[in-house]
View 1 (cartoon, rainbow, N blue to C red):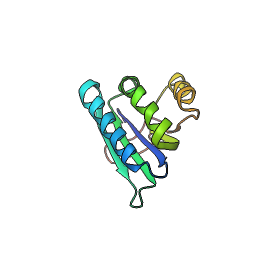
View 2: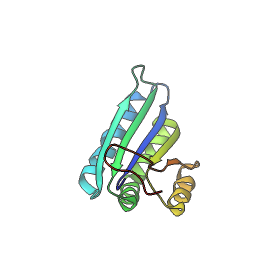
View 3: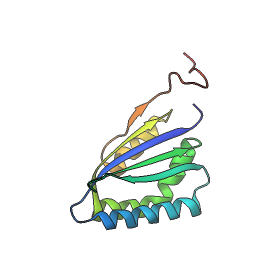
View 4: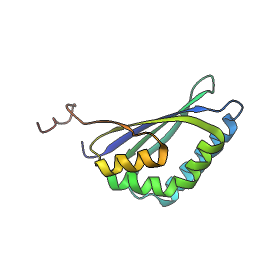
Amino acid sequence: MSFLEVIAHAKVRPGQLEGVKAQAAEIVRLTREQDTRTIRCDWFISEDGTDCEVHEMFSDEQGLMEHQMHIMEARMVLFRDYAYDHRSTIYGEVSQDFINLVKARMGVAPTTFSFVQGLERSATV
């Protein structure tokens, strides 16, 4: 697995769905304009408007770090004003330094999974 996938989940604050959508648009804009290693940045809202998920893919850990730097302020606004209960899961290899950085910024470490098996190739065991 030569890329990283991230799935982030958050709850929408009551009455703040439009704010979440506006911040999602801002984060996607920043990603398009500034990121060089981001492959995917897709936002989803649950049918009842109470949850959101972000599905992201990066070429490598450096791409994920770059993305985090570019969206830092917009993400702070998102969680300060519109969303809460952020959780993230990273699929692929990341350093402990990166996990510590995410924990320091978001207050909780991401869950991580290492690649084992897939249709295209097997992991080295």
